[in-house]
Image (cartoon, rainbow, N blue to C red; front, side):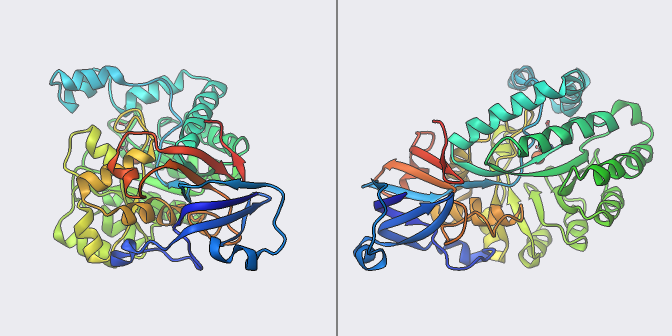
Length: 413
Ligand code: NIG
Ligand code: FE
């Protein structure tokens, strides 16, 4: 399929690079362009002016997309989309002024989702998550990381990871699986934290290794959840079976999670709402991705992540949705990117890079998606006729997407 008269082909790259600091603002584009897709792969592209020369024999299937922009699909590197039910009751409780502690005392929070998940069959979890993936792919998401963490028992954590594995076989969307057994302590281990850490290390990880159920390890390193020492224990055991860390750190408190992540070569460090100057300096030097989840800050009415300070320090800022029933009940990356411009003062070029190529790095799929490059998958967003690429983020919450192509196939809109 040959697309012609493309208004602008956005994020065109000749080689892969994790974009850090000022480099995030560089967004290579080709105005008035063509793009050839064959067998689900980007085969050729260039300026319309050179089409005749580049392609003396034009293919039969030519589509004129005059006025439309084409950009790579969003790469959402942090989600929890396998869950049962929803938690809008807590949402209303919060509006009515209940505190986090009061909601937890009523059985709310992660444990609420864990109880619902324990009572839900694998088949049902699978169907609900696949439905969410369909919704997200129509919104332009072509690659997604999914965490366990609403199981909190050997049986339920493995159930969640098996669902993720099955999802991988039922969609063209690239899916990576992360084991987040250390999301919170289940009630049965309330007085025996080390007992639960031991269960993760000696009961869950061996099954995960045996059945090859996860790509990465995650821990919610936070006051009242898992300490930096416990995070280290879990990372050590997981690294021994080949799972690289992608960690929840500094959401509410700065307690040393960043240091543990860096010491263990974490692929990404995620959340980062609460950062000291020292933390920002560390992330500026850190090799991996600093993944910001602005919709979680938005939904919880918390201060946003200091994106500008991180970019100035040289960090490889990445954007993801954190889609989960408690703190970000939406996975719409169009809103994540618009919110990042509006509230974190990121430039449109920076949010596109952070949510495409850097997101791909945060899931180690940068060699196959995340930019417009010869040989990569045709994971593409076709915009409606809009005045400029900046308009995508300016007109937040409007649907500016005409079509989405994933691995060369059109997604049902
Ligand atoms: O990433 N911070 C920890 N975990 C989730 C929220 C989990 C929940 O409330 O269900 C997050 O925001
Ligand atoms: Fe999360």
